[in-house]
Every structure is written in structure tokens, then in C-alpha cells.
Amino acid sequence: MSARHSPKTISFIMTAWRNGTSYGQVGEFLGLTKNTVTGIVARNRNIGEARAKVFKPATGTKCKLKRRTVVTFDEDQFAEIRQRAVKLRTSFAEQVRLLCEHGLEA
Image (cartoon, rainbow, N blue to C red; front, side, top):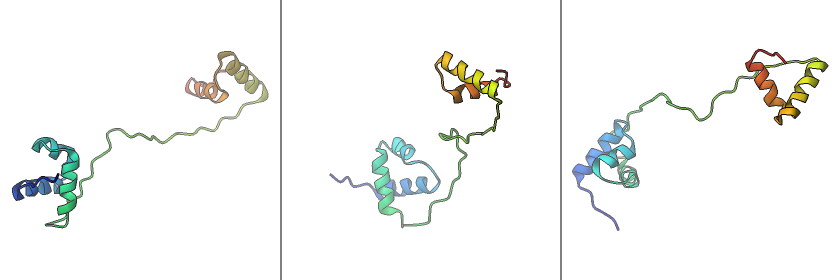
């Protein structure tokens, strides 16, 4: 099941890939699957010049850095937060987070 692609098609794919176009975009333009384009690039990668390095800023990161805040409580505040957590059926940590967001007013 191998399809032969013309040298012109392969040249176009390699040029687009070197310019930073994604496999999916090239495939969509040519009516090919992303995997077909990936295979063509893999087999012809060493022909011609190397791919230009294109650095694109991340639009949405999956992992955000967590900001940590150190909070200290006296025994009365600790007991009050613990009672509130039990009453609302949430964790102690969740109650502390909510208090930090709203100004530590227990």
C-alpha cells in the first residue's frame, strides 16, 4: 500500500516543513493525512538544507507554575479553619486557599 508521490509534491512538502509549517497543515493543503506527510519528511529529511528553527510562543500552557505562600496560624485560627472545613465538607488546604484569596479573614 505505498503511494508514489511526485518529486514536485515531495519538494513542496519538504519546503513547507523547513519553513516551519506543521505536518497537519501541509497534509490538509495537499489532501493527505498528517501521517503520510510525516513519512515523506522522515524519508527525505536528509535531502537539501536543514529545517529552519521556528520558535513560537506557547498560547496555552498545560502546566502553570504554582505560587506558594507560607501562612502561619495560631491555635485559635487553626481550630476555626478546621471547624469550617468540617462544616463545609472541604479540605483544610482548600479553606486556607480561600482565606488567602480573600484576605485571611477567618
